[in-house]
Length: 233
Image (cartoon, helix red, strand yellow):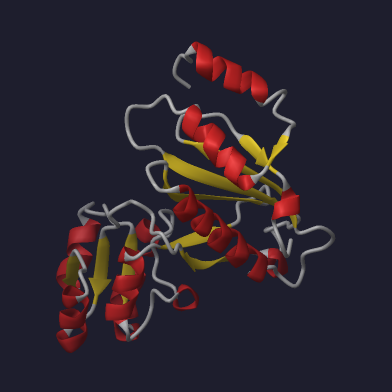
């Protein structure tokens, strides 16, 4: 974190020993006041869940559309032919192709935030498993990225839809907007993200599901959110 001003130091002291709980709106306000980076920082959320993702029945993964968008321009590649390819381009896809796109990605051009494919193209896409898999970009029908409706999938990716996936320690991280967003926009994104996680509660989850929620920025401290403001956990 960058060097703090006197005002920011007083705010850090207000956070106490990092055990204090804050309301969602108060946490966002504090992070705004603590902002030190010159660029528009991302508001990050982290949730500690009562799951062990090593067990298949405790995996938490899915998609959520943030109503206020992400503040980022998502670069989308689509594997499709014919009318489907035209629909993807019309929806705003950055690159559409088949064997040519395969070769381009094999050459190392993987600067995409989302890769989408029509079902008939998975024979080609499957050859990219070792490249796309580690980056979390492999199209998946459960996530809506293998679909005949590629135009809608592209619009969703460009319109604020993000993927979430629990990590080994039972933690989910996500960016839910920029600090330049209004309080209302950030709160709407926060609620949408948390609601999606709650609805994705796996059958194998035991005990308390949502155990901790923290908010932070790219270069700011973490602030713990009072779970009393969160429903359904």
